[in-house]
Amino acid sequence: MDNALYVGLSRQMTLRRELDIVANNIANADTTGFKVESLLVQTDPAAPAFTLDGPKPVKFALDVGVARNFTPAALHNTSAPLDLGIEGPGFFKISATGGERYTRDGHFRMDDTGRLVTQAGQPVLDEGGGEITLDPLKGPVAIATDGTISQGTERIGKVAVVKFDTLSALDKAGDNLYRNTSNQQPQALTTAVVHQSMLENSNVNSINEITRMIEVTRAYESMAKMMDSTAELSRRSVERMGRTQ
Image (tube, rainbow, N blue to C red; front, side):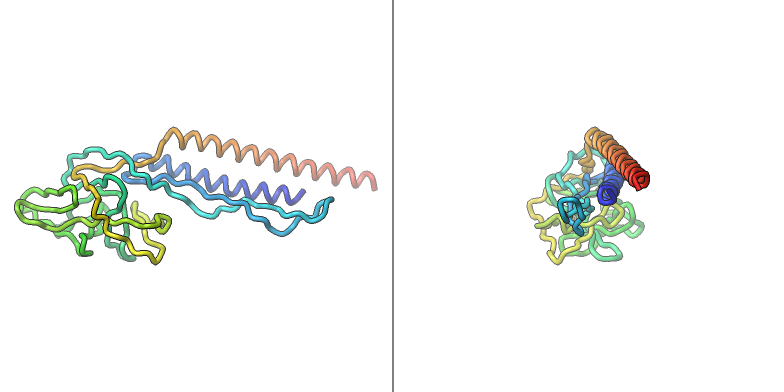
């Protein structure tokens, strides 16, 4: 009986984790460049359980990580000259305190020193790994589809867009950024198409996520009922054995 309760509890723990992830997806349905996440669950045999037919393996539900769907979403116009959206794959490269970070969120601005930065103030890097500095006195900022930035006739730099062979190497780092958790180095994406005054939508499908939330909630409730029934069956068995003695 105890084995069924332990297995049920392990499943409840993964369902609670999955519910948190689904709720986070829904909360970020309007977040620029957000990528929908899902929980990876696998069953692992633990120590054998002793049954009437002899020892048999017991499989528990285990949370083995979070998967992200990096499928690009649609772009929408913002009319802000420093907003950038990537058409297709790729990431902008950002300089952060802990090292380089990567993002699909191109909602950039100019700080007090003229640097092109994220909304959190982290510098956007160019193709050579340096910061991009703009001069308001040189006129409007024009950004070509290859990421080249110019003011008037002067070329200021080129926004770096990079790709990874294995996207599972990217892990969330806060502020809508990702960090590289592997030894693979990002590669310059020379075919990237960058659109000025546009931002990428989240790729969250709210209807799908709400449906998934209902399914997870029902599965959790069903598991709770099963565990209650198992506990009640165990209690009755103990009572009957006591009366028999």
